[in-house]
Length: 178
Image 1 (cartoon, rainbow, N blue to C red):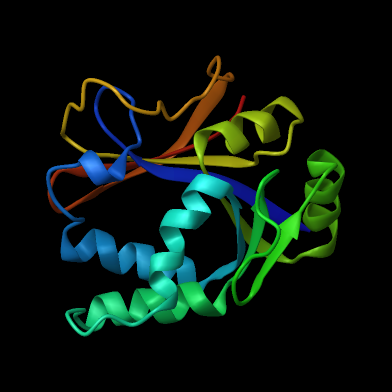
Image 2 (spheres, rainbow, N blue to C red):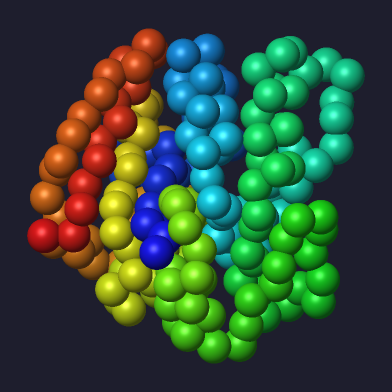
């Protein structure tokens, strides 16, 4: 049975728009993202986040070793994509729909390991159906002022189970439903 984890970078004021963060993750945090991605059974994305992540499907000559390692891990990991508009997805990806709740419940039963959820709206739907097992907030010391909030709806009752500090004063906060 899979564990479904919703995790994203978040500003102090609760937003997840990584393109508006003032800098890329520090090397230690990026190594954590590589390690985490290497260990995934797969990722579950909404269309918008999937569209931004396909960047990692193509090599870029300006990449350093860490970026190449992340791309290799991302490409190896299976992706399930939730979209009403896409008709096809890229390599190592499966398009889900139209009954997302049933399909994610089936994935949860059939897949062993961790499935990462990306995107606040998708995570909100999964939380309403009781399908998020863990929340990982990578809290960055920046204030964005606006953007997409980490929680797309009311915050569910949560219980903190661990925290870890990374360089750049980033905190990883891990919560489970209370």
